[in-house]
Amino acid sequence: MGSVSEFSEETALATFDKLVHEGVINHGASFPTYHTVGGFEFELRHRPSWQTKPRIPTDSSPSDPEQEPFGPGSDILKSHPSQVLAHLSQSHILALNIYPSSRPHYLILTLDSFARQDTPLSAPDVRVAWDFLQSLAKPEEYSVMYNCASASGCSRRHKHLQVARRHRPMSGHGDGGERATRLWPDIGTDWGRREEKAKVAYRYFLHRFPPTSSSGGRGLAAEYVYHYYASFLRDCRTALGGGSEEWWCPPHNLILTSEWILVIPRRYPRDESYLELLPNGAGMMGMVSSPRREVLDRWVQEGPAKVLGMFGLPPEEET
Image 1: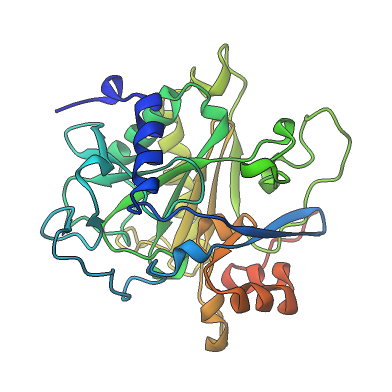
Image 2: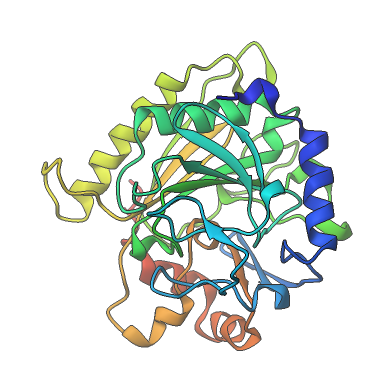
């Protein structure tokens, strides 16, 4: 098996661009609008190139006789042989996401194609994701996401994590020279400006990593990261009414960066008419994407903070 050491960012980016040119990866012009509510920054992005993207696990993938899934139990199609970039361990592979939100956008998939997205991350899952993040030249420019269970906004059942570029405040712009939208845990921190922390419309569990001797959190062990994930998973279980039943996996989103780990307990809204707005982890951070402009228009009409609140638990009152 291969390893992270065999992975080349330069080769991955060249492969990404090649597959975009060949029409394998659906990455085209996109059109953002920006909103700020209580200091929480939103980017609502219309992505016409995502017209064929499955939205929920029961949606079928576009059929192509030349494509096969990532194993007999997988519902994720291997769209091109070059899509697979490396074996990260004996249990995980690295591939390119064919519906990317950034250039590039990675998938970390379990080699066990019957492993499911409604189960918690294991210690090996977290270790592989953390080690890959730390292997990048600039880990602070990426975030790892895990959407656990249908209520979290996942679109496929085969267990996988995503690693995408993260807009940074100091960059001054996003892809294509656009405005950078900051993830809310980065607002009100030491970015050389004075500002209030963002008002978050849902309950969450956040831990900021201690400073390390090297950049990008490279001094932290994966076991340290997993400890907080497992602890927050128990907190999610309690918050969602599951008590201490270890067998039950609460729906949640994990967002992991080199500076912090965040877990968000998730739920469906009481009004089913809002299900078309179901956000994944990126959406809960304010980065909402859709191929349908009318969906984004409804986010604006309803109020983006209100929508996030419907898909999470009420925030705890600050004392």
